[in-house]
Length: 273
Ligand SMILES: Nc1ncnc2c1ncn2[C@@H]1O[C@H](COP(=O)(O)OP(=O)(O)OP(=O)(O)O)[C@@H](O)[C@H]1O
Ligand SMILES: [Mg+2]
Image (cartoon, rainbow, N blue to C red; front, side, top):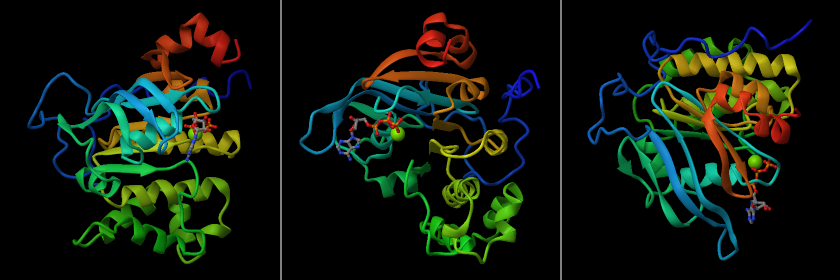
């Protein structure tokens, strides 16, 4: 096996076009939003801040994802990748910068209000209810919905068939890769307009990682842009339209996934040569 990842990648450059799924909230049809501009669909721009009264972790840090794209954030442990995601989701008070979704500042909104606005977020840790069944986890995911979410649940089961098989099992009894599917499925239950994933392939084997990436590409093709943090930098950049390398809370490099993979400095410092 020369290159196990050689034939992967988000090669379909028009992932929004073929979307037949209704996993996403209806309005996302490629039409410009109300405050249409050149700015990305979701952007945390020039974010500065940290936890509580502690020191700043993020310094003028910007991460973003465009409609129809997958954006990937990589960087060393402790670089602030999760902190940047939490900041975009509203889990820390920023001292500077802004968070904008579809042209609207959402920086003053609570995380729950951001979910209502269309953000789906899968945190790095504690992203499922281990003592609840798979199906109960998905039901919890639909907490903001007052309509019938059975159809969305069926779509999640179509995307992750193993979850349908195990729907009556406690989520804590599942394998690592299956738990991550539960976590992503839970986030999809709100029919988000954008999905944020913090290390969706943490702790899984290369084969399972590959499968998860394929499912993530499939979600993106339904028209849900994806902003994700990944430890598996090389593989993640291969499927990324845009990539960000964060170091010590700052943007060290950014560009297309291909640009970053080709950048000698990025290769030497972050991709193992
Ligand atoms: N809840 C918290 N309270 C205070 N400091 C925190 C908290 N969470 C993280 N930090 C600090 O913020 C910095 C960045 O951590 P963060 O978890 O964002 O890094 P990361 O890039 O996601 O790392 P990893 O690759 O290990 O997930 C670290 O110095 C960490 O100790
Ligand atoms: Mg992290």
